[in-house]
Length: 142
Image (tube, rainbow, N blue to C red; front, side, top):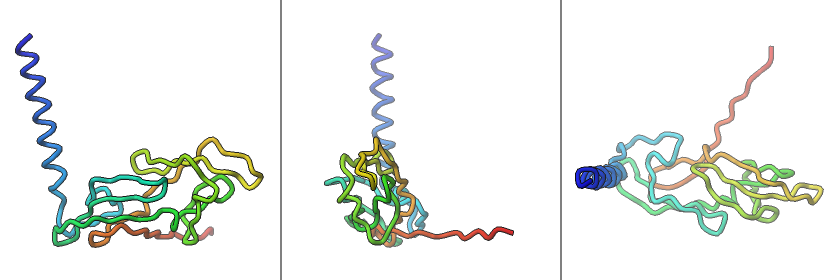
């Protein structure tokens, strides 16, 4: 029994130390589409403000926040990226699950949708600041 307890404690200690070290070993100057690769302490406040500590190319850390209400709208029960924003006018009970925004939104006919989900993939870390960048791909039919 002692052996298992010691093994359990050592394993948990290793996991905690590894997690702490991984948190601060982001590659300098590498900014990929997923902001979570170079940001941490990610939180969501007041159902619309995304907050994080983000690293710039020099490795400096900056607190950053992004008001998603300025970037996302409700289009007939569906969240969508939109520069006009304003989803908070017709959506409620919003929360994050990993890197997706979940809300209950009203449809144009006034019916409350069970839940609508929007991926946060367009959010990027740009030099320590959260920003939205959407790259549109246009496919022509032949």
